[in-house]
Length: 184
Image (cartoon, rainbow, N blue to C red; front, side):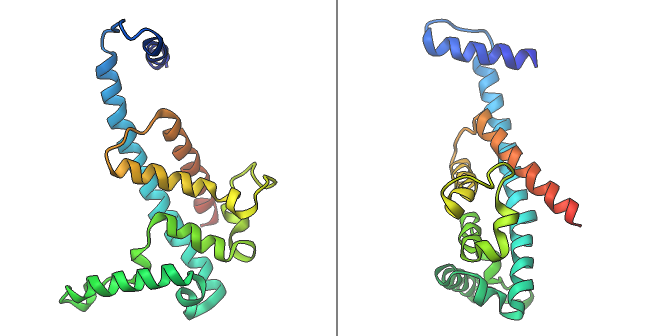
């Protein structure tokens, strides 16, 4: 509370007066950077693995049955995921350890899958509350996935997740997990 407020004020002051040194501010920023990154990565993984991967697959299976992967996944993503799984499986001796194409998807791939069957399957599930009437259609309504993917990729490559970005991730996480656990 108070410490965060004062540190935020010191950060703003430092931007205008770089010659002023606030005791402990650099240590605070390093600690916050690490904590933000760790928390952001954990939440993004939960969103991707616990929610998107599971829920999108369920919807596709309901709609397309046994052909869910062929019919529900855009051709480019289908081909790339199948090829990647095949490459990995060539190195695996035990068939039980072989990779499934669905497990080869990247976070941003889920957006493309959602866009492919937007109105019929996904619009009501992946439009953020309060954005139901925004202009730009499905592209605008799934922009949160693009932003989440950007932060995920930058976080994965030594990046400082800001407090604002962490708040955005927490908002998405809370929204999707609430949907997930209320649906169970």
